[in-house]
Image (cartoon, rainbow, N blue to C red; front, side, top):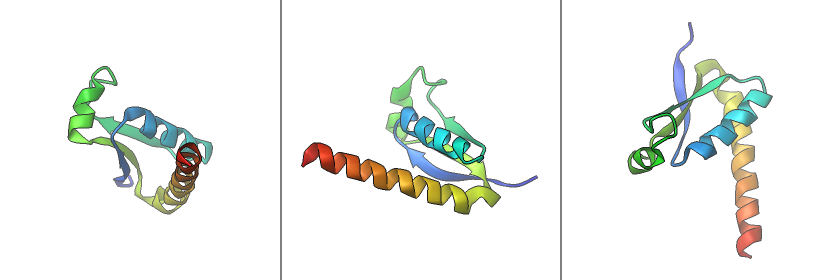
Length: 83
């Protein structure tokens, strides 16, 4: 059995869900670990900044590449909104 690691920590569950969907598209299994009562109390996770996206350790390199692309696209989108 492989070890699980936290590939990214998010402040909002929906951000983790977007990343999780992109990983799934690449065949990478993941799950969200958050103390937010299953999404019913998002304020709990925000206070703790603890919405974690967990993956198998052997998927870390590929998952990191996928999430870097997501981060670059989000930065580009934010620049377009503000600029």
